[in-house]
Length: 332
Image 1 (cartoon, one colour):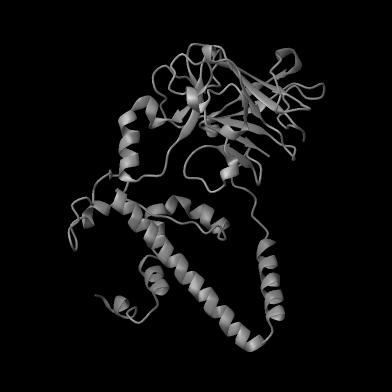
Image 2: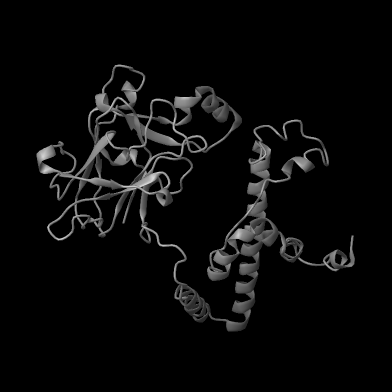
């Protein structure tokens, strides 16, 4: 133990960890320095797995320590260790906040005055002037992200729940002849045993998605919005960025047509009528990764990307035997 470490023996856990790791972020995540300098309020949490195997045998040996691990990915127990680590320090911050409140109340002796002081402080924090974005983004602030990935905190964000018509019902999912888009976990397509193993080992992260081809018929989704803005569709990233055999990116020419029917009076009873819908174009470039943005032609703008407020329905009509995946819909 060197002198600097001895000085930390009587420090708090937060001080101890902060001092011992203050240079670690720049050593391992130095490429993020420009971002953290500009966005120092972002509260970035980082954790690397570069050496978790080196302490696998320290202390009481756990035979399953490396179960589910890879050089880039911690084991099951490693995940739980990291969760406990985060929880511990967030709870320390929480305790520190409570102690501050108790101390302040002893001075103010008036809860209303103290709450007003806190409100003023939080309001100032909320109005911190943000720096100019380093990169332009097509994604709007406070975007609504609809997906069925697990885990997710907002249950109302289910993409499946936005489907109006075209998805095979749960009681027909086992029927290979049932017509419609299918809903399943991505790994069921490429490696079904991986899903069974994940459930058995206690994992909770699963990429639920919908997929179909020309035999599936059109898939109609409620794309209503209360703010004008873009509509962005995304597929699942696949395994190391590659889709399985028989699948193609939905924005590829000839794979699918996408339509939007504007200002639908009765969403629940909607029936897709191509003549009443506006055909969309799909904008995809490398920076969009697994997503494509919709745009359409108007009298004023041949490439309009902003959708007005209203009750709209998005319909995807696959037109190839090649299958396509839909996993996310992002709106304003």
